Length: 88
Image (cartoon, rainbow, N blue to C red; front, side, top):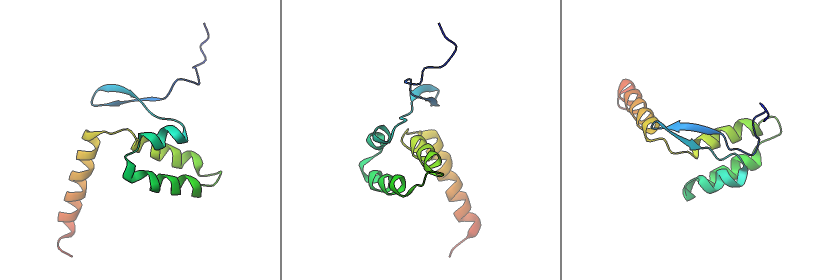
């Protein structure tokens, strides 16, 4: 047995205390996204240059894995920021 990690295993993350696979190819990321986000994903991937493609893929990889706890925190932070700024 080798200590080298297998490259065909998908990366994993924790969501709500459960370990889940993270899609790690352009087709897998696209398939995991909600239909309404796929056009924006396609545009971002197609516009990314060689120096940007990894960052663009990482962004969308994480977005493709639903995380209700993180979504709730971001929504609360957005509300707090809106309250701090006051009426426009």
